[in-house]
Image 1: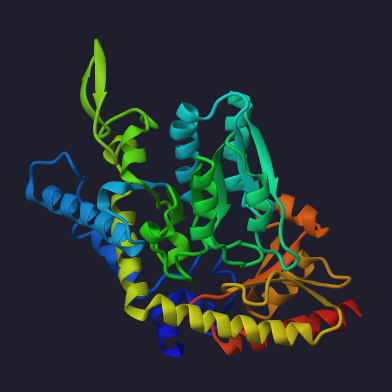
Image 2: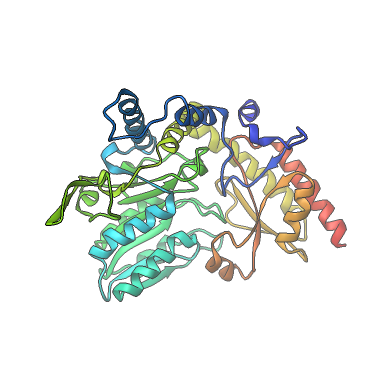
Length: 399
């Protein structure tokens, strides 16, 4: 995919040299096609949506709703099942504040896993504290995957929700969502999936997976920041109460009482992220044109190459499964990941260093932080070579 790198203007330093960007799991660089779509929407085509009677507003409304259809199709859903949110974090909070408030009560249980991102932990802790519910934590396998055998033994009819990551943002392991859905539904629970790291790396078909909620963000899918999506089964979404009050989510307002718009508009109060939605759709088009199977194969080859290179270093500790999806986390003995990241930056190599919004996982691993290299469709063997050179320099500095 070397030719795709030219589509990403952010992959150059100010001096015009290659920037070895290995932090795609945090946020993906943007292709020119997405930048151009956002520029047109913010300039030549810009108008508000759903309200104006003039032609450009009508055209922008059509573009905004077309973006909803495009995003829904990207994950195998229907447009009436997709709510635009500020990102996956808000999508999960939306479910907690609506479905959770209506369906989780005192004594009920929620099952999470040891590797969840804070965005898939804290909203459930807040809900549990309000409702008197309990949170259970599914352990991991020896190679860092969610242990679904353990989950099967833990689940009871008291569990109302199972919330798990499709792909770990630290370890890169891919969860068998279809099996997780069978386990959750077997005890009458709903399954929410954090799909942030999955949608840009592996094909997602929510109907085939049979989950109940699927949350993801555009910016990890080569799209803009500030927008994401919540997919939910239509029958569940239609029963959920509103999330926020304001314009656009109403049917009729009077001081005697208010009625609400049907889903998904019921959950999109106020002026939406119009421009970002257009960019979101453009990102889906861009990724589909390349093909997720090709992207996954490309990233998998890079993961194998990097793990082999790091595995040959006796002072490097690798985390996660060998077949992780686009993500490699590691520790260099005697060097804090922040120090490693700083030295690598001097070499025009960008990695993520820290707890990755997964402090419970760090505690489980027995480390304060890890270094994380994460690939995108634009990543190359040159990026790996630059990373290895930077690690070797760091080893010399720290003696």
